[in-house]
Image 1: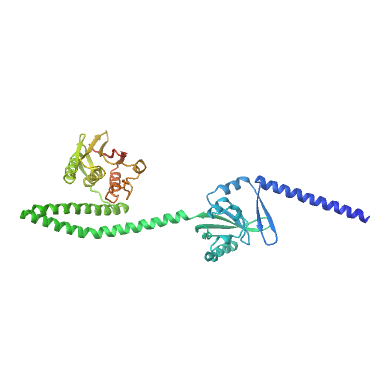
Image 2: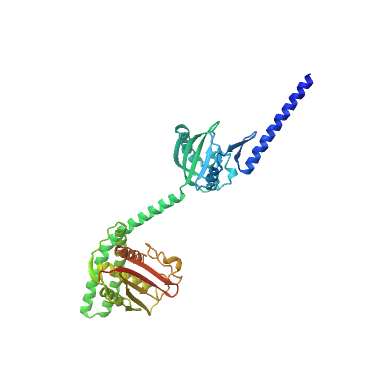
Length: 403
């Protein structure tokens, strides 16, 4: 009788073990097929296998493919789950993240505030803050941790969404640098304007005196000095205009004016100082424009100056116009170095300068075309450029006319 009872107990135990083996096999098969998330927590005396049943496979796919990192930690700060994005932020394989303590990835000096953030989440149900993560082998990353306490079937955990702040921080840094640069430009241009104006006045007075004395050589030298002062004055003016544009303070004096008359006036003035090029013109019938005559003239001057700057001497610059039912279009064509295709869309950006070859460097701040673009836009016009590297460029603007 005793032997029978022992035999029955043995059979029952064998059946129980078979059931456990079958259950384990089913779990392993589910893990293999991706139906269950699993991880191993290593301890000194044993390895514990944890599984998280997926309520819906679509949620798992969502968390795996999202741009933010996602993870779950238990009350011992062990990472129960991590998506691939969080592991990539740490520049670590996923298997070296799951099952490890969250604070293993936080530099020692940043652990206290990180622990405080986790503590707040346990106590209040949620918390949010910036944490620096990384290791000796990886770059420290500024990450925004958004934590929420969640209730599991038999335990509690904290779910964490991790957002990489690196690009945002870099953008803020660049914005700060730009603001400091703008502030410096504004102060410098204002401080330069007064002494340059005084120097120009003295140079013109000296040139007048030398001309009256018949000292042509000295007068010609002062004329060249005056031309360089004009260039400096123009640069200072550009800097001041940029600041006014950025602040919406650039003033316009609108009036009716003859377009061709303005173009011819600019050509004559520019030809006096551009001796290595011949400026030719092919103008259509004139039209009356309602706008700021001086600022439209500034755009034309800038187009011609650029044509001379970026083309070899002894070549022509062609200024031409055409008329439609509603607009008049002006083009300035040169036969210079041209603009690479990848740079053509950038020429009207602030501080952009076309890159020349190693033998050629070009003066200027890269502001003229930016200012020109703003002026034409304020006149409800458009600008464009066509260019073939090695053959030259054509710059255009188109404006509405009244009659």
